[in-house]
Amino acid sequence: MRYATLAIVAALGFATPAAAAPTADFVSVHVPYHDLDIASPEGLDRLKRRVKTAVRRACTKASAGTLYGHLNEDACRADSQALADSEIERHRSRSLAMLAQRPG
Image (cartoon, rainbow, N blue to C red; front, side):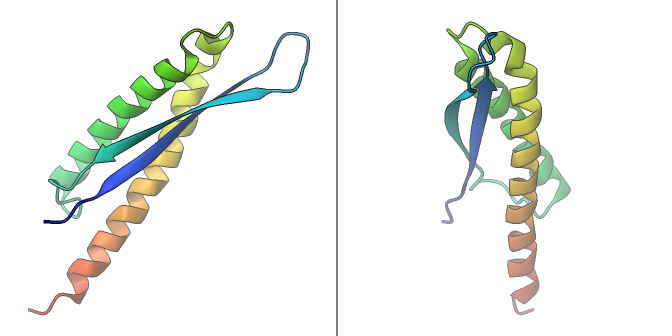
């Protein structure tokens, strides 16, 4: 059985109002997809839904308890989703290449 996870890092950078140097909080989330065929449109859609949910949770977690976190949660989601989308494409391309190499 193959095992695969997609790592998502949600970065929430925020600056204090006094223009201090920005800081960042990171939350790493692993999204399993070993049960999906990401070469198929259905499997890809399921993975994207899982990732969207994970990004939402990670950015909410990263912003929890911070003074300005709620202001950057949307930016965290957009940035993290963009990074995750490119990671999904990389994994999907690898999966399609492996399928193309199979005999038969």
